[in-house]
Length: 174
Image (cartoon, rainbow, N blue to C red; front, side):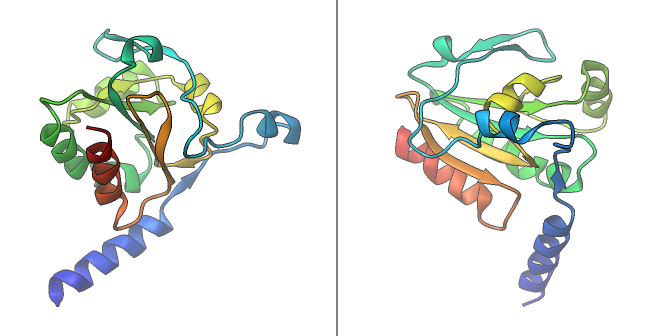
C-alpha cells in the first residue's frame, strides 16, 4: 500500500510539473502547419547529430524502430524518469531499436547535464526544428516510429503507464 501511495504521489508531482512549450511567438497559422503527429501518419524526415557527433536521419533509420523522446533539462518530469528510460533502452539494446532524445537545450548544457546524469538514449541538442516538425508542444513527448516509417505511438506529458505503453509499441514492431 505504501508503494502504491508513493507512486500515486509521484504521478501527481510529475503531472503538476509538465512544462509547456512557449508558443507565444507563433501565429495560429504556423501552429496549424505543424500539428502534433498522429498515429498512423508518416514519419517526418530529419537529419540530426547527437551530442557525441553521431549522425541520424530517417532515411537511414528505415527498417528500425525509432523511439523519440522530447525533453528539456529544466523539467522535473523529464529528469525523474531517466532511470526508467535507460532501462527501456537497455532492454532493447540488441534489437533494431534506436532511442533518440531531442532537446532544445544547447550542446554545452546537455554535456553539463550528462556529467551528473547517465542517459542511454542518443541525445540530440538544439532540436527545435525537429520539435516543430513533429508538433511538440509539451515536455515530455514520446513518439515511436515503426519499421514501416509510420507513427505507432505518441504521447504528451507523463503518466504512470507511459513507459509500459512505449515498451508495448516497440514489442509490436519487432
